[in-house]
Length: 107
Image: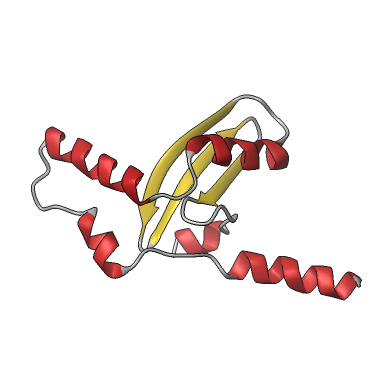
């Protein structure tokens, strides 16, 4: 039973949903005007499936603190919430709610 739980936890860390290349390209424009940057943020908010309240609940379970700062970001094909708390930093996948290891994002 213990080995099954370890296997399931490893599987949950390794199987995170990513954006399609077309969705990723929709977040990038060549024009860097501030008004268009806001449009890109709106596009990212349209793509996420886990809203901020759900991400806060996930982060609260792990970090055990009330003061959380969430920022929706993307890197490569990952759309994620960067969570900062006192002594705790998390990356929560905005597409399926799983925890992303920092190694995958910083590649």
